[in-house]
Amino acid sequence: MKQDAFQAMSVDELWTLHETISTLLVARIESEKRQLEDRLQKLSRPLCRDRASVDDRIQRFYPNFKTPCSLHKPGQVVEKNRAGSVR
Image (cartoon, rainbow, N blue to C red; front, side):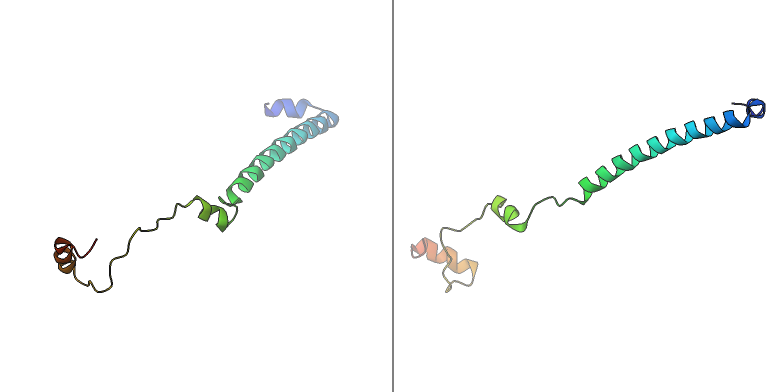
């Protein structure tokens, strides 16, 4: 609206316009506030409920054999493997 339109309005008309605009702005602000609160709630949620649920999803690896403690160098493993003493 132009400045002349506001000057031509009576005080009652200006007050009604003020109330209408205020009502619309309050509705928009509340709607945006709800959306932002929902987004914040989603972001602040933990990804996993607890540590146990994470551990349940991790597949454990257990080796089928152990390297003998007496073997300290890789060359010894190859030599003993060729000899047939390490299986």
